[in-house]
Image (cartoon, one colour):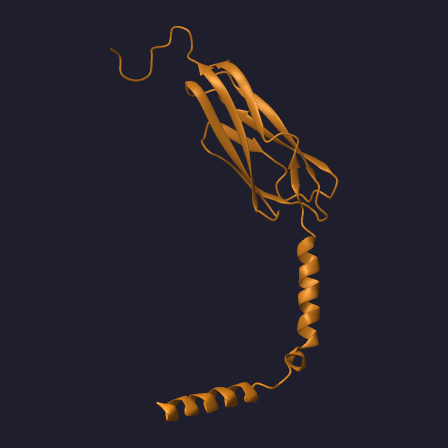
Length: 158
């Protein structure tokens, strides 16, 4: 047992002594400069700031088309580029300035058309894909849809 502890102590001591190189001598200054440039560039990101990210149409009649406009500002420090917009269902159609750079400080608009389908409380989402830090922004529209007068109820009838 005594010999084993002496051998382990000698091995541990030799391992500590062999790692005597200074870590600061191993640093490559080119890599440090590249990392600094990369970090600075990552700070230059566009930011989409919406005046409101949700709109409530209130109570509407079924089938009555609705439209709203979401206004945003690029509050970042790089050009904003919207690459895609997608709605949660075919009854909602977003229109945005796709692939057009929006400079820092400039405003833009995303129009959303809703065809008034559904019944009762309805909530739809629009996903806006852009070159922001998160990569996507979510917009919501909602309405309470009253069935058309004289329309037959949808679903089981008692």
